[in-house]
Length: 262
Picture 1 (cartoon, rainbow, N blue to C red):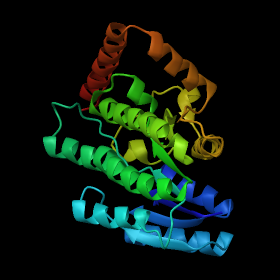
Picture 2: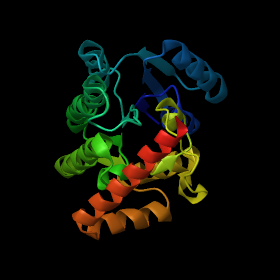
Picture 3: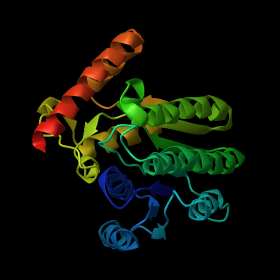
């Protein structure tokens, strides 16, 4: 079944990708900062599914460590057949009120790392005439939700551009654009999501299953769930001034909610 390399594999969607890919018979290379958590995941997958699991602890914001991961992706002696660029994080602070260092780290992890690893994978896969890249983006990339939206817009557009460039060479690229998924993502970002309607929450297992099915059929963009497909369709045709106005109103409500909570 080949080998899949997954970034951000110690928790959340990344761990779910590892579980489902191992269940489909793929050997794995798991990448994240926390070596201990990675080893625990790897041990479980080896014993449960009988697949080979390599652990590669790396901070993707560190250029030298990112280079090590890129070299592994491009290694022709140990080919990676599926690259899953999943690592990422959120922030509850606005772009101006937050620290610039955090925003730069967001660019390093969710933009530069995606670019570097996609480039490494594309070169190796194009030479072999096969392979797939799955970049985890977000519905936020179609909206106006601060720096995170700008980052995810980049990921989606890069994926579309690469898909076009690599299609003649037998390589597919898919952008996964989920909405709100039940993982550790929002808790780690210290976001209060208690008021989000239940209908807007997605199950991580369902999201990953839809993503892998999309990769299998060569889809360029995957938006899980009919609800979010409808939302993305609306965002694509709505005037941007309206999108900005709605986003501004939601941001004001979040700020007032935080102020009342202090």
